[in-house]
Amino acid sequence: MKLIILVFILFSVVSCSKKALYTNLQYNHTSACEKLKSNQYEDCMSQYSDSYEDYTAKRQGTTLNK
Image (cartoon, rainbow, N blue to C red; front, side, top):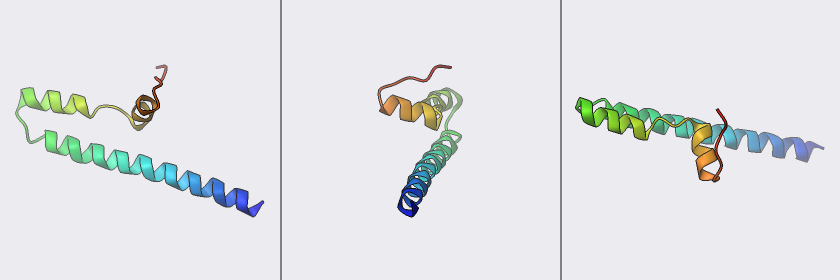
């Protein structure tokens, strides 16, 4: 039983870590976009507009219903 709980906690932490990493990378990318001119800024920001959930769905070949 303890092993099952430990495995569940481990998977939860890994999942949260991936989301935090993705969020941090998105923040860094959008910060870099802010240094661009307006037409380049819009293109840059559109590249980094996906949420983590959208990103993982695309990676898995599925789409989220919104």
